[in-house]
Length: 359
Image (cartoon, rainbow, N blue to C red; front, side, top):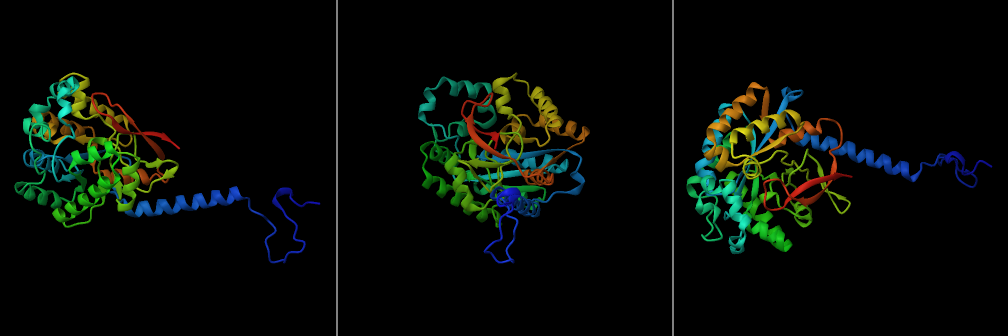
């Protein structure tokens, strides 16, 4: 008479060794989901270590991309020195192959192209040869002989977390636009090969050029087992979700505006930019600030040093993306699962990949 009630089932015609309590399918699924989450947390915590003294402190992660030979030889030595003096850690993504912004000859017909160059002071910061590389001038190698010694110095500094910023960024951008999966796969392989050739160590992180990627690039990346990636703009670290599939490579998005974007969308005063960045760092829990070598490392050196000193006075500690991810994971909550989309960022002419809804 009680068959089917309260999850019980009849034991008639069954051996007494069988359980008489039937766990519902939903309960089984929930238990399996919980088990996977717990195992995931254990795996992530073992991979992303952080200094215990950072707990409870105000932190901000620094990210630098090296995308041109000029940035590497003229700006990076200064940035290394100024960060080392202030014991500021950061993550540096080193691109290889040919430099370029992914622009083409048709960009010269677009008035917004020139407007961006003028407002962002790009020519003064990067120089004509870098801005017009691949358009009016031939592309240059990012890593030239004189840059090798600088890269060796970066490797020797334990406070600098290293990753690849992609092989030939302009080819990546064109590959994404054309949805050419073979090109994207080739670029991942070449990026890793060049990184390991230069540094003699495993490449464990990746950053997409110009915050530009796609579903195909995200899915392809899963085959290369990076510890983490920094491909997009957003609010805090997360796992990307592509067509209901949760990817295994966590994302650490840039959460703060770039100085070039600020100059295009606000006033032309760098002091107001650094003041805003300080205010936002104090508001955000996991702020990520991307340093542009031609700007903070060349054009606005003095203003950048004042920013670092003011941050130190306010008790802000600068760390790498890896440590920031470790602190987020230490919360004992699963990393959020979020979708991605393209969107416009204020002060930026081209679309960027943006962290969207948690699912």
